[in-house]
Amino acid sequence: MKKPKILIVDDEPKIIRFISANLKSIGFETASCTSGSEALDQIDLFDPDLILLDIMMPGMDGFEVLKRLRSFSNVPVIILTARSNSTDKVQGLNEGADDYLTKPFALDELFARVNAVLRRADSRPVNPIGISELQNGPLTVNLGQRRIWLHDTEIKFTDTEYKLFVLLLQNAGKVMTHEQLLSDIWGSEYRDDVEYLRVAIARVRQKIKQVDQESNLIVTYPGVGYMVREW
Image (cartoon, rainbow, N blue to C red; front, side, top):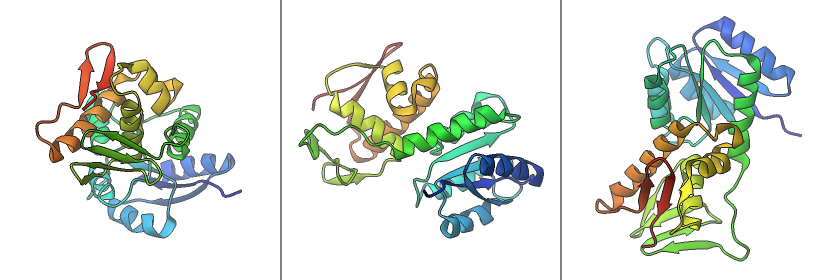
């Protein structure tokens, strides 16, 4: 069975050694680099299933690496930050990170988040039997190809954004609660982490509005959840 591959990007060698040794002990293959520019080169060579990306690095920091990475790849990313305030976390999620860990972190938390992100990456939105396409007015989703068009313009979503939007679209006209969406997309252990959901919804809305400025497709029900309108 193929071992999942994890690329560790951190400018502190002792942290790389610690993370790598422990991930290898539970069956992962790892590679590492100590700078942002090296990380971007290593992605093509190593083809990781997941990246652990430190934010505070000299030269190109983790945010810039993530921004460049998202221009050509949807590989899952967990950002590592030494700061516990929400600014770094929200910025990382806005740039397309899938999760974050605050240093110092416990091994069981690292393992849990790595496994949760890989599980999400492997999952697929549930397709109703016999349904290969979803249609909502000028919006079309090809479930087989995992592609979305609005007014014949393709919208590029990350894997998490795609799964979230398709789940809402499959339930168009129905309000889905924060807890439902977080549990279905991120996993039951994330059901109270509403910040993840808010950031992902904001990114989905932004990408839709880049195609249709007047769109108000996703409706917010404060304190409850979200709904996709029937066009």
